[in-house]
Image 1 (cartoon, rainbow, N blue to C red):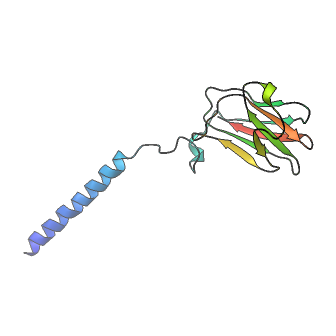
Image 2 (tube, rainbow, N blue to C red):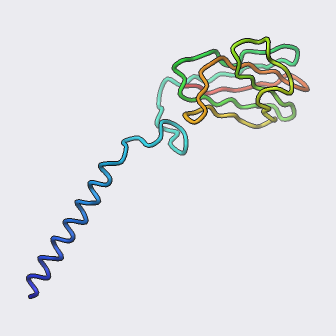
Image 3 (cartoon, rainbow, N blue to C red):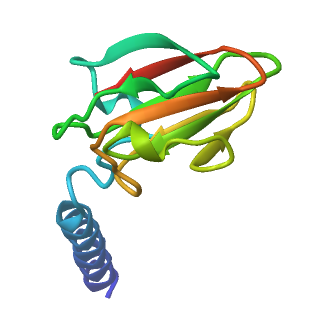
Length: 135
């Protein structure tokens, strides 16, 4: 009786381990393309830069990039805001339109909101330095 119980326990343990292995094996190899807590997946080919954004006219912050998978734009100013414009031309760039990036804030472009076009900025109150990271 004891041998049968040990045999059944061993078979049950093997079944549980096999089931767990099959479940883990069926999961995607990379559940995150980039971001969402998986920041270190991209280890090369990242471009870091900064741009001074004017108040008088639109300033190009990032060029269009069909290979873009991630970008982060940060307003490094301590006082002034910048308006980000995700448009193909400077003709539609204006203060109070686009994405309002407060002093000290960052805007992230990733798999959920991937934009590959050119990005312009227009500062309000004074020139603003915007730093960027792009892959």
